[in-house]
Image: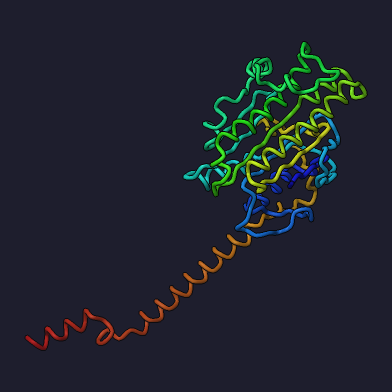
Length: 320
């Protein structure tokens, strides 16, 4: 099974570029030897990314490929989701981005109909747990409690994993089409358990083991739904170093010297610079050559033979 585990993220766009490149999209630069170039016409039908907050490393029952990466920073797969929506708008892509603890959900394409009954708010998640077919009837809780709000938040995220695979199994034809699917899930329940009981508590250890088993089961189910043609990635991060915020500057702010660039160097160019430069350069050269050739021909033109106006005028004079 293609299960990739990351202990941290090294930069903001790292995971985004890995997901984009594995699905066949072009990226600027990915200086990482963990993902090699493959067949462009045989890409995974789905990429499943699960971000687990509150733990540095998560040991899964089945050994997968693991990459320890330092300096965890926030990331987003919005650009990959937008690319799928733009390129495959006329087909049936399934794009789901969900953070249950924050009640944040984003669906594109057929995801709106497939996951129409998926619980996304905290109230819906709590009610879903106490239904007859919930995971509480089969999941060993050990030291966790059904009466604690933190434990219920953690268990509700596991319920979401189960419901996603269950709802998708009712639409197996979507897993066999040619449009790529993207699933991005952010789980923060384990982090809340660690804050509530402590990382050395039995509750945190039991929750980590239950989460690992649930993730392995979820990965196996998604992998089987896509007939083995899917990539499941798990990102385990203790805490992000810097929040994903937008920097702003007031127009009344006093001007200060830029210490980050003391030599006033130009900003680095991206990979589109050479393409735009060549287009403009050769277009200017072509226009210049066209003007020179046209001007030369007009200068050396014989009005009596080369111009149709003079030729018709001479014939008219001779007839008169």
